[in-house]
Each structure stands twice: as C-alpha cells, then as structure tokens.
Image (tube, rainbow, N blue to C red):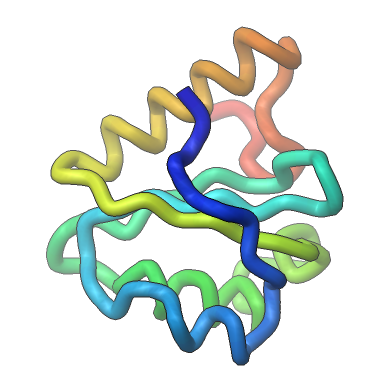
Length: 102
C-alpha cells in the first residue's frame, strides 16, 4: 500500500508544515515517479529534518531534484520503509532511482 499522504510541493515553505517528530516514512517524487523512500526512526532525525536535508542537497543531487514529497507516521518506520521499497520493486522491477538496492 502506498504512503498515505497527499503530495506536497518539495519546497522549504511546505516542509515547514511536516512533522517535527520521529517515527515515520517519507517519499520523494519527481513528477509522478518515486525518486526515494526513506524513514525517520525513533531517536534519529525527524521527518522534517530529513526532508530539509534532502532539499539542501545533503544527500546528493539525486534527491535534491524532487518536485514533491509525502509522509506517513508509523510505529515501526524502518519496517514500513522496507515494505514500501518492496512494493515498488514488485511493481516496477527496480528500486526508486535514488535508493538503489540495499
């Protein structure tokens, strides 16, 4: 099941309204294509922190090119991230362009 979130513009102003808490997953899109699926596990950086780091290019130019993002809170973010990646691989026979195989 895809991330349960609307697609928000990948801008600093939109990201300001993202959760400043841990325990969730996020997806970055370029148009209609998923670029990256990530998670903000408990005790790490928040979803908002991770999104801002991608926007600033701290994770490289691939995710910086995103046009939209979405997020979902989850009790087990790493498990949900792996579930979303598995669904993507099953549907498209490839990882999102900025994830690569794990």
